[in-house]
Length: 343
Image (cartoon, rainbow, N blue to C red):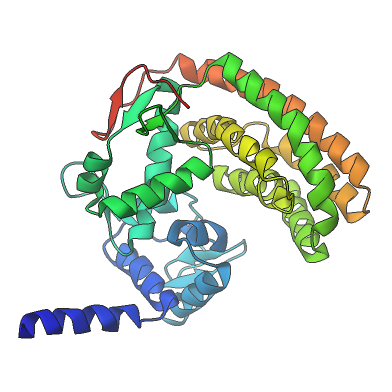
């Protein structure tokens, strides 16, 4: 009984630790054991997505790490790991860096909070997407990531909101297969429906949100290097998800939610190449849309969005063809092949 009370007290004390401190500790641990090496670039957006928290919390965590001389500012966006600002910056997957892959071969284990698992799971599923259909085992997921069944279901539900996973006629989680025909059909829906959603949500967008998007796009457009896969993914989510969230037609938004699956094809393409082909073109297309929104010219913004989606449809179809000739990756144990009917 005494041991149980001590354990409960310890859990309570841990829950009282400010979120930014636990995040800074997780990052510091990764630095200390060498998963985050000197020169690694840390920026707010990927960390906020990784820890499923706000950028304000991440800003506090980075400030604490900077005060502890674990990271330093440099002539670029974000911070560099280490105290030497002259080392060559390295931009990589923060999800992989903040996981310990030493247990059970290459199986990642969380170093901090369960919400760190979601980005890694998402990346693994995206990499397997062109080689579906695949069934997802909840039981094996709980075993692989050492979490409860409820945590697994919550993660899969979040991925379902992104269109990455679905449920079949038996209410089993599946990773669907994407064909060239599927890509065309999904984009046809998006070309029809996203401008309708933007026509309603555009006037509700805060000026600050539009100005932030324009500033981010202008910054990326001014860089000589191609934008990173993380930066492009953030731009896509900002325009095609968050900017449309003000639409009150739930049926329309749910249809678009399923069609976001095609965004995963582009994300996988960027993951494999480590860069974003045609990133500059995408930035230009986004820029003119946001410029129209800033002028309150919502009709033009909707027309430009349809043009952007039409071009994206062609590019995505070509990328899917490229991915289809690749050798299938070694599948995690929680994925198994099979012909599956989707509801």
